[in-house]
Image (cartoon, rainbow, N blue to C red; front, side, top):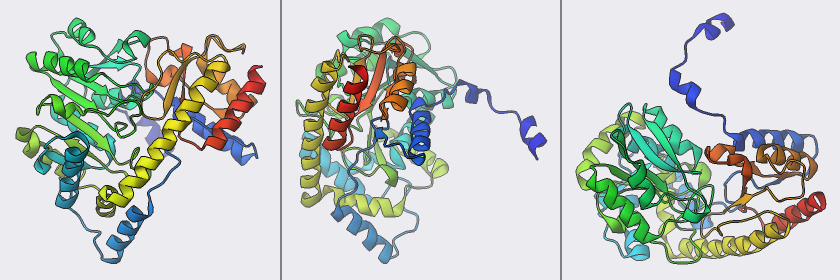
Length: 395
């Protein structure tokens, strides 16, 4: 059996998917914890909050009632209507429930979008840095992700000028995230409108990942859906709604494309989890929304603590994050021998300070060894303890 396994030929695309350093560091941290080390995790982007009681109760009731069978590939009608109501209440947008496709997490939504829109050899523009899985979704359908270096002057985001300059004969569209992982920065609404217009004029698509939009701290968020019905928007119940392991998200598509997306969803996924969907309907109850807003305020307070604390330690934060729960920090001035290599630095701080941080290597090719990503999706007490540990090591 071992000889047979070794003789199997993997598809070439597998070789183009890089290891996920976030998960590798998490495995190392778990090994150290098993050995008795008190590790503070600031690597994986997962809220320390879990689903609130109304959501848990709705899931339990669905299971008691036996509502655990397949649903429509597009999702429960009542959940799609609840999401449409959320867009109306939060953004003043009239999004027809028929345009909303409930998916097995935002990852499934992006898989559907790439399956529907990307042909072999097509190029898709995205910023560098960006969430690594986004480029792998494109590559999985034999497209070519084109990472455009986007630095602090651009808030680590694509600009309209970037899109115009890099749009070529094989470019099919743009894939954006606002707010972004790893930087926590958003694209200004006017800039996003210009990007969408450029793509539209060239017959291309605009896909916007808005999974962190509920966690916007400095201004009311504006959904990309405000800039045209031809824009595809991805969202999730993982971040603002604190349902990471439930694997539930949604995708909003142009009306004419719904039948094609339904066909793909039927064949690739059958449907999302029925129990998770019945639970998610309760996310939009007044009681649950009040809890989410309280938790959002807690995240904002954590950001307002951790950013100046990091700067006092020598980390440079060139762009203050306005959303999500990440800080993208320049480490070149910290007092540590490994300050010129964020990969080596995060390894050293894991073992020396027992704090998990993530190197920029996961997120692109534009000077990644200069940056680390830090997640403040953990308690205030742990954030304070992490800062004290780092201060002792970097003193």
